[in-house]
Amino acid sequence: MKNRKREICTSGSVRDEDGQPPHLLGRRNFLHLAAGAAAWPAASRFARAQAYPTRAITMVVPFAPGGGASAIAGILAERMRVTLGQPLIIENVGGANGSIGVGRVARSRGDGYTLVLGLWNTHVANSALYALSYDVTKDFEPVSLFASNPLLIVAKNAVPADDLKGLIAWLKANPGKASQGHPGVGSPGHIGGVLFQNMTNTSFQFVPYRGSGPAMQDLVAGQIDMMIEPPTASLPQVRAGTIKVYAVTAHSRIAAAPDIPTVDEAGLPAFYLSNWYALFAPRGTPRNVIDTLNAAVVEALADPEVRSRLAAQGQELPTRDQQTPEALAALQKADVERWVSIIKAANIKGE
Image (spheres, rainbow, N blue to C red):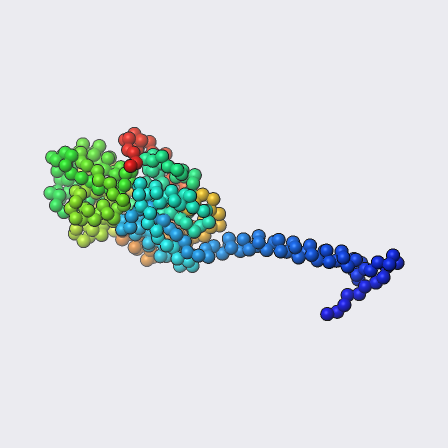
């Protein structure tokens, strides 16, 4: 290594070729090195943030396995992992109309590695049904809407009615004897059943379950008489011939089953109900992480195979402008404002 030149000053001190005393030069180099070292952790944090995700992501489905929510989560998670480059692990945490699983995510760290599949009942109705330890809007960051769908009015094969008018007549002839299963107090099926009773002047018992899967199993087995359930869980059983279907709770027929009449056509005009599925992250999740997750959802919903699989289950897919975090926030806000007052007026309480 070439030696640096030094000169003897008139004062007798030694200076380097740039005029700086050696002890000052050493201190200057030390400060440069120290500044660089101090910057390393910040740079490392930035690199880690930019690299998200670097490990598996957990998507909590707040209901028991086997229902419509699990089916939709599985379809989306399978495709999202292609974009994200990391697996999405589905974890079912059922109970209290989804509030147990949702509450767990609300308490999770906002780092993008714990997400929740939110539904109309978990992120709208539950705010009126339970004294929650979290806020359904303030404690979550919206990511994207997945799908929405109307419900099907279905019954066990042994019910002696071949159409909706016949079902209503049978219920009127047997007040309080029939039973309707639903996946939880305050679920669309439950609230739909209350509205059904009000509109038809009928009376039947409600049987709550920990998710759509167990309820549908009992309907197929003949343990309960009817359900008002999303196509994700009911349509496969209808196609298999294990249950009856009377109508779809919408003003138009669904593409997945165009042979099923609407409630208007079947004799119960304006009995409209729909559910939606969306992805939420805990409050405080960085915007770049939200954007990364949103991009993965958008790519998944643009995939023809994903669209086909969701449509086959009776799902209606959101348009591109409905797939933004802001659009999901607006949808949730509007539904909270509309339905919370209806639920409270019916005096429905979570169990």
